[in-house]
Image (cartoon, rainbow, N blue to C red; front, side, top):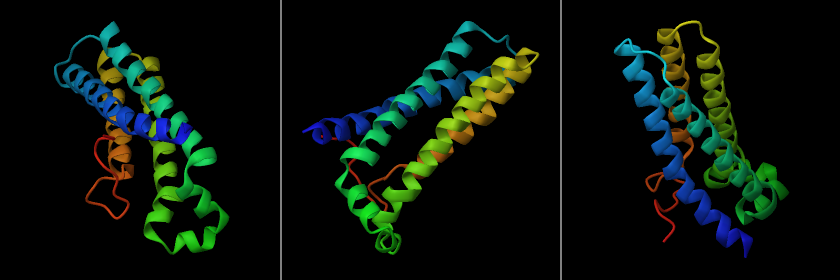
Length: 154
C-alpha cells in the first residue's frame, strides 16, 4: 500500500526537483554572467533546490531500503543483480548517483553562501548546481533506457 503511494510521489517529485534545479541554475548563471548582486531570491532558489533534493532522496531511500520489490530482490541476490542491467541500475547506480547529486547540490549551496563576493557566489552555485543536475539526469530511469519507467505516474 505505502509502495503504491511513495513510488508515484517519487516520480512526481522528479519533475519538481528538475524545475527547482533549472530555476536555481538560471538564477546562478544570470547573476554570474550579468554580474548581478547576490539576492535573497538567489539564496532561496538554492535552498529550495537543495531541500527538494533532500526530500526526493529521502523518499527514494525509503523505497530502496524498505519497499521496492526490485531492490529487495537485488539485495537478496546481489551477485545475480550485478549481471542484470535493470537490477544493477536500481540497486547501485540510481541510488548512488542520486545521493552524490544531493551532495553536489548541498556543496553548491554551502560554497555559494560562504563565497566572498556576489560574482563568486553565483559562479559556485552555477557550477555545483549544474553538476547536480547532470547527475540527476543520468540517474533518472528515462523511458528510452534499459531501466525504463514512465514519465508520469498516471
